[in-house]
Image (cartoon, rainbow over all chains, first blue to last red; front, side, top):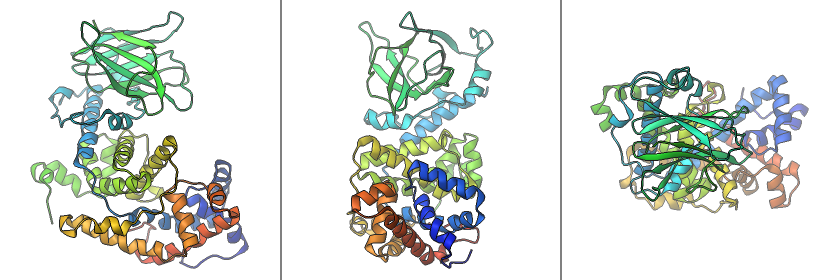
Length: 251
Length: 209
């Protein structure tokens, strides 16, 4: 499309809508209306494609700020661990999680950014479930140890299975009620200790409508006494907001 | 051309660094952490800068950038080649996360008084890498396109893009009709689009560093 400005009646009607749409400034109903129109109007679709680079350029107008090196270290530490879990789920054991170089995960950092970065993590649920769990869930082979997770409330049908491989693991849950908007489930790892060890925040996750979900526990299990699950505000919490709904005792 | 330590010590990283963004994304989709590291090295600076511009503080910007990149890694955010370049997509993920962060925190006061030139001048060019220096100049040139707009047009665009406000919120904030807000958005974007026409590739992608 040329760089001319369309001024016909159709354009007068839709171009302002397209501009607001491109800037993500429409209310949901208006957005749906524009998307419905775009589906059947090649003129407006072309017009939008022409306009989008004007929005794409906006981030480039921001003064560059050098990101702190710790940011990359934190991101890559998590990425490295999760990549190792994926490889483990796929049956490729090398390199194991414990063998990966550590780049100071959590060292000198507040917990908040770590929590924010954990996000909702449902790790390749189908692949993990199919490849890691055996049919009866009691013998997965390799060096994995499987623990049963039980609901703390007798009336709750929630169940779970925790598969531990070294310091990391995967928790499979079932029969947990779906969370409401703005809520997630969060896993917690409690260290061993005679008076009850420290509780560490782990990954947050959601479950399907059937109450089924999988969540990776990237680390901390080699010295853990139990893994617990609570319901928390979206983004996760630094400390549990309620008593555990589901607990896997690790002996 | 500078060769990073990672490239010098790891042939696989060096190979990945030669790939175009779109090719790199295929490796990221296969959960290749080296490919993801290259992706971060290319776009992490712009991502953090945008997050900082929107949320206004370093800790918040770190949270947003980390959340965005891990979302990309975990495939919660999917790259759609039809929607534009990888860089535009990464930055749109960052922008969405930053706006969500503002909304969660309830601090949605418009941050339109940030002096980007002052931010740039506060960092002597001697402390910058070559890439950062180029980005600085690109930023200045492109910001010129925004600054050349009438204030009433640049304001509605900035409130929408950097503040995450809807056009109805902007209309209420500025006490003007909805149609006027959308009309100013349209005029402003059209003028920017015309000014940056030379930076648009034949396939419609914006070519920025």
